[in-house]
Image (tube, rainbow, N blue to C red; front, side, top):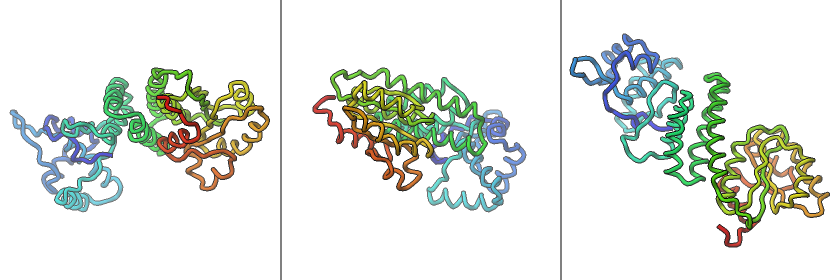
Amino acid sequence: MVSILDYSNEAKFNIKAVSLKTDIQAVTIRAWERRYALLEPQRGGNGYRLYSERDIALLTWVKKQVDGGISISSVAAELKTAIEKERWPEAVLTDKGPVASRHNRVHDNKTLAQQLATALLRSDERMAADIFGEALGNAQLIPLFEEILTPVLVEIGERWERGEISVATEHFASYLIQGKVEAIYHSLPLHPSGPKVMLGCAPDELHEIGSLMFATLLRDAGYRVEFLGPDLPLKDLAVYAGEEKPRLLIVAATILEPAYSLIEFPALLAKLKQQPVFAFGGAAFGREPGLSEKVAGIYLGATLAKSLAKVKSLVPLRGLS
């Protein structure tokens, strides 16, 4: 997340707009200004108070602390101390608040992630597309996936689990990001002479975005990738691998039950005349220590970068780009 300091200090919102964006009554905002000097609004040509995006972010943070049971006097004192020490609090992400601007500096990945999450929470497809385009232009694929898209997906998922957003909002965000990653995947060359890698998700595993990101990285690296998507029956997958003969077969799982089903998969592959190298990965193996040791395959690692490096060691590209 970005800090409150990362928001623009340009005064342009009247108190009614600030009240709507923060869900704080105007009378309360004025009282906090007067009693605790939380804000120093500027005055417009007509003499009315004008507030900045930073003011809105600050008020949103204050409201969250007060709603959590901390007295406004304690919150104001904590904020004053933090600002004096140049340790501004982290901004609170909302679906009404402003987007951090970094004062027109080049956006870092944390800022872009926060902006993208804000756009998705607002169900603002145009804004999300613009921010994604900027992120794609500023970052290589691994940072784009690991430092921007994955944190956004985690943020959206956690908000849904806490009941802060609807299923519809979560689906909108997930499918928009998935569509953008699919577009990157299909825009990359096929590498017909590269080592063939087959990649998909375990049975009953419906979360395919992480696997799709990894398939994109593999294709970008020079592998001939065949992405098979979610919920693959293992018997069918083994038969298909026997027909297609990939050098490497990767199966991913983000939840435990699909991950446990992979324990039996190597026995199915052992029946093939030409067995591929079998590897696996996904968030499920990070949640339960020791689970990766129960699967007779090669665990790729906890991050996309580590997994890509592992694949390159297992199946070298031999100079292909």
